[in-house]
Length: 366
Image (tube, rainbow, N blue to C red; front, side):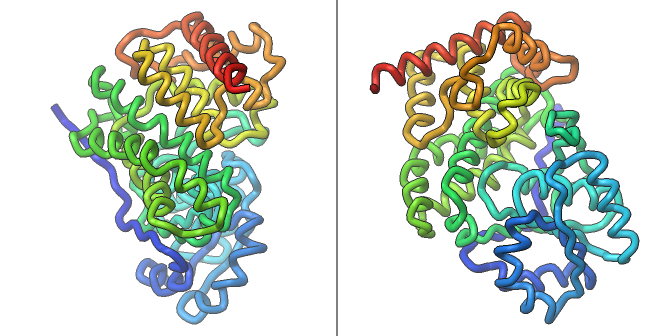
């Protein structure tokens, strides 16, 4: 049996490491094209750009807010015009996915700098492509993982805590989806079966969330870099990235993709919707009462969504939920990596049950 495990070439994490960006990037090229989200452009670049420009020629372009085919083509044209030889992405998940896609199309090295620990996108050889309106379109499988990933934990700690919590929502799916793929001998993002290493890292990711998640949230509330915050940043970014890519995806992310078809969910983060997908997948895959209680309790303890209302769907109709269920089960979706064949009506019932459990638990607490 062939197994494949995918890793970024280099992963560096620590406080204030952006000050060394120029030195690190100059190992890959002399002229960098930086795709920068608006927040990073306005608030972070002034802190390190002067130092970077001592060792690196740099062209900066703001990201257009959606990782769409149109935005990728726009940026490719700009890179070609300035003849840059290395791509840098700095910002949130969609900015990073766009930078990876641009580098992939141009066959250039890419440096990924997440300013949030909100998704597991940074380390992967994958870009999630959306329409210009923000609806999931497809996965773009890339030739290789990023050449370098730099995570400045001081930047992460200074960001709103909701982003870190969203990252934990994304990471929460990792072990459950990897478990399903392992049982079903389903392919990971390379198409091959995952390795022992991948499944082990996915499990460490889950255990790290349960042990350090609440404390890391409190540290981020205080804008403090602590060991617990370091552990959760690594879990959200590296462990979850390696776990999902090399272990595989299943129903949680397929449900997320279905949810993006409902416009009210666009105001909520990727990991928040994945958390709903994970909770629903526990019902769908018949997990034990103990596991369901543990995961609901974890989500409640850090503020992840546990009901439809928490992702803007308090008035969602059965017809809309059936639309989500049908999209979840579309041909090629990752729900088909589950050991048991899931139908749209089963997903619909699981969604309704997840919401009922979440609402019941909230009512008991109140």
